[in-house]
Image: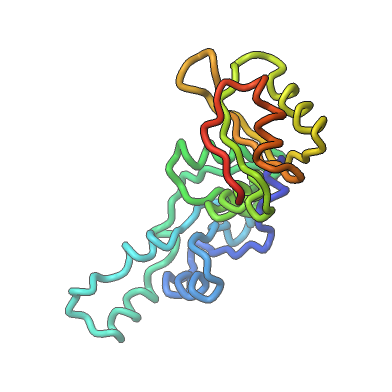
Length: 216
């Protein structure tokens, strides 16, 4: 899957000269936590500002300033003075897993998506990744979910798929992770059209262990 398939195209942006109070209002109104910052003239990406950045820019609650004074102070503070200028971004044609790796490696909550000329065309957030995770596991579809320990050998997933198909089962989702030993792997599979007993009977000749199995 590509970044363009899950990114949000309804993009809200700020400019370096945008007042912090205006950026805060946009975030509150649209229920978002990040704003890509684009140059006023070129319209290219020059930074990103987060809800946390704006919070840190605000006076402390212990401040002796009254509400009017704090508002006036913040209205003079621009997004350009608090935004992050070194922006980690992605391209619409990037793989989703590469975008997720960037977010984890850089410990960031979103990725602005830019085209070849650095014009913002979308954004991916942690929420988009969580929705993708839910879809990949078929979480919204009822079925039988099994965690299996399988041999780490070529063709094992094909064998399991064939086993399920031969017993009229339908695989909703399937994924593998490294096991505790180099010789095995964990397989999480969700199927429909089979009882627990039918599923175990169909796959038991090709697995090492049923770690967990439940109706969800």
